[in-house]
Image 1 (cartoon, rainbow, N blue to C red):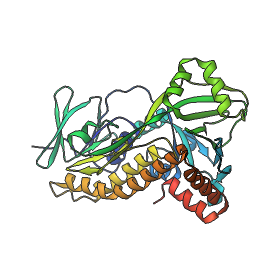
Image 2 (image 1 turned 90 degrees about the horizontal axis):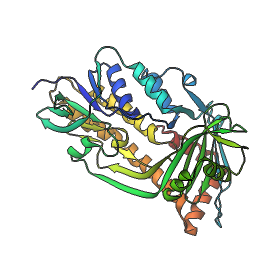
Image 3 (image 1 turned 45 degrees about the vertical axis):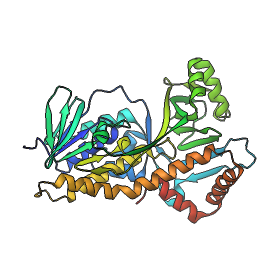
Image 4 (image 1 turned 180 degrees about the vertical axis):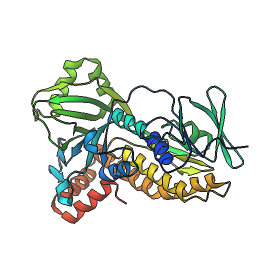
Length: 385
């Protein structure tokens, strides 16, 4: 059986497209299978290592042309708990940076990635995959019209319910929370500048991320039933709740977009790749939007995938299998470390036990007062390796 291409990438989201285009720009032949999807109205806060990867890979130019700088992170403990954490400000200038990262609209990033795709060696098809099997040294995917395509390496970027992950028999652990995230854009009477503002409440954070001028992107985590009830009661009721949660620190707020509610869960895989299948993005990991780690982790997937493919011995007919195993080894530590960090942080925000509250408050006091610990937290949060 003859290969149709070097690599098949399945999934049209940001992690999948970044992987497909960066692989093609590295000189590999790629077929990208991206079935039509509704517009992604969310935003992503990308830390500087992720932004550097995008620039070095040619996926974006100057970040200021697409996004808004994140120069500080302000954390406010708004819980009524007995043991509360101090208000804490993290400033990028402390570590000699002009910004921790940049906040981008997902739709703008997606369009820019598409523009960066090379004209040769890269093909996009708007078709879904219905099956996968291994045939010797090649992975074979079946498309929705019955067509089959073969490649040594198949990349699954097809989301939390990944078909490729399932048919490749890669086991997962998943946990569903009672909480959900409500997202929308807001216009504020008083701008937040370059600071991301996090109000920590008992059921999760209420976060305002700078989006330029007086615009802010909201991510509000709370009980799913409560968020959906507020959403169903109309804009006025929702705005009243938003003003209360923001403690009216930024004056009158108005809705600048529709609101959307997303259920929250965590997902981890036993391995990110094997048998010529590599998993990237939410096919390999998913967790609540805490600490701006989701797409940052997906872009580190893409970077390690390119490195693993570049390092493969292409004279070996089974190079796709070797590349998938190398990729899994490169990703194992980062996935375990980041997943554990986000899960522990989210659960600490929800913890009602006094010892847990004391540990969290003590941790923030330590971060506030000890510069070396702050620098370590900066490095971990930014995904530095």
